[in-house]
Length: 155
Image (cartoon, rainbow, N blue to C red; front, side, top):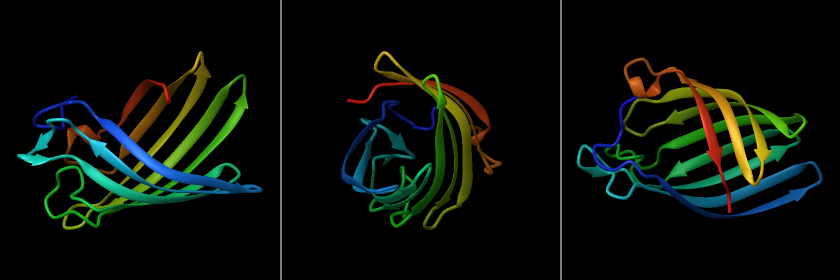
């Protein structure tokens, strides 16, 4: 797998927002900043700022994101949008099955679809995941299908 950044490889996500629920419905609005210290793509900063709004009902979530800055270093791409439909279901024993389909519409660029299916488990304050991810992008090795094992910690 190649590094998609010309320089740097660290991603720091900083976000703030508001979440509320009413019965089986929930909503989430916020602002998200992706920071790549020293990260460059073709000499341009990869840092990206997005606003988002999400609505959920039971196991389904729809999320819409709007980029206020150029999207991950793509020139003249501010105003890009992302549409995300996801589902997750706890299946017992601390395991959760998940599925996702998304549509990235890039201003002045090539838009694409992506999808993911997988399983996760919370254990000892961490979330462990195993997912299959893919896109319909044909001309970029970074967008090829792959299986991803992840470990995350939220605080």
